[in-house]
Length: 225
Image 1 (cartoon, rainbow, N blue to C red):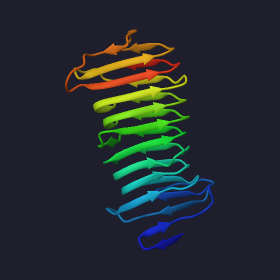
Image 2 (cartoon, helix red, strand yellow; image 1 turned 90 degrees about the horizontal axis):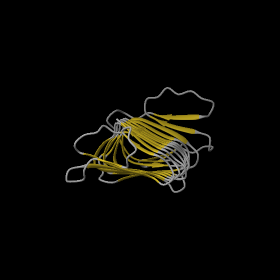
Image 3 (cartoon, one colour; image 1 turned 90 degrees about the vertical axis):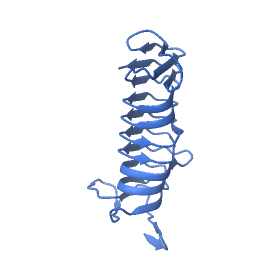
């Protein structure tokens, strides 16, 4: 561990862990825990290699995901959360707010619950894992799983959410129907069910609508209330 100016660098073997916040964690891998004073905003957290990282009860400016698993709980990110190229860890966000940008691209599972994304456009991509979304607030979102399923429920979307499940993945969506809800669904070689009916569209397009574009290649699309 070294300190240079305002920068803290923690180095170790690829199996090590980095924890920030007030945590109670026990495991077989070596763990480094860093605790910061309340109401302190950290500028940047950047993770390299296979380090598994947990961030709790923090205010951050930027977060960059490495190849290990990353979990954020009750974290506010004032700028961006992004993943490095070819990341393959699992990403979990719980009760987290991201003000500007969320660009997630990893081979692992992506789980996002009870979180808020204020940027107009958000991109979430898993090349080899499942995507689970529940109880989040989005301006707009583009969600893609290349080789996994997409599960979403109780999402609040201001404008549009696009979800694609490629290569045999299914989409299971819990969407509460309202006057603003528009759903367009397609499955190139699977079944489409919207609210118990074999239909590909629900709702009428127009101004001030929330549009869900759901598509699957070789999988099914199911929308329930």
